[in-house]
Length: 378
Image (cartoon, rainbow, N blue to C red; front, side):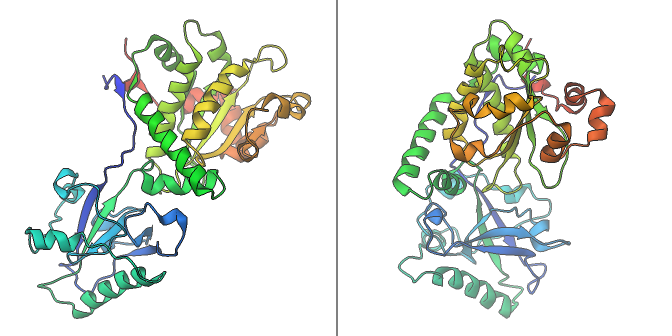
């Protein structure tokens, strides 16, 4: 049985990782770096000037040492290259280096001078020069190829919803308006503090989870994000639950899926609303969708890849703009309202033959639903 209290899957507190080239002083890191010194407002909460953009294939130092996309290079051989001072003391942070088998990094010193050097802030340089300084330091150490003083990189790893990774999304959601984006992210942080932890034992939420009225579809697709499945018919027939219980179910599955994003700065999900047996014209409870949207739009901006509503007749789909009038135009462009199974499979990366072999979308969902037994409490 799992924890009855569900907490946010992201935190402002980073993990730390140190990697050493001791076994191969002249070896390649095996990663493409991201220049975060371009003078852009989207960089303002990023602590480093260089981060990991992509891991190269092969048995590289980066892969051996557990480096991940998004990791921020904050120091090279004990010398800091930070945009601003660290928010936490190093001994307060989880060191994931120790979790890597056979990986040990010996720091030159733990004295105050060494700690101060490691936390050095590089400021006041022309745009691009701090990034160049990081590269120059790395190259100079590697050029020496000294086995006694190998290249050591200190990295920080931030969660998908930390300001480091979330700020660019909030900025994009407010079309680059910094004051509006700042207000939005502050309101989100207040919402997060009030919302979590979510009590999974709440009866209404348990009814939704047990009925699998909201769940996750486990359909692997390399280029498409995971999908939240919503059986709208079940939601409307369940007794003793409130719209907030549906919101909480959405939040739980969204948090879980976004936490698994390969790139924490670009987490995405899809949403599939199964309207089988639901009459849009007479029996559709739009209040549920409004409540979910009211929580989702301001708190998970730019994380929705596509929302697909199916099956919806072409006549009703043509008037769906009125039905979805509460949705902003940017998000509305990501909505697919259709009666075409071909369109559903195209947008979500499903195998149509598999769907048809299962007997339909609802049965396909039962085949591919990801078990959430850990969240079920009798």
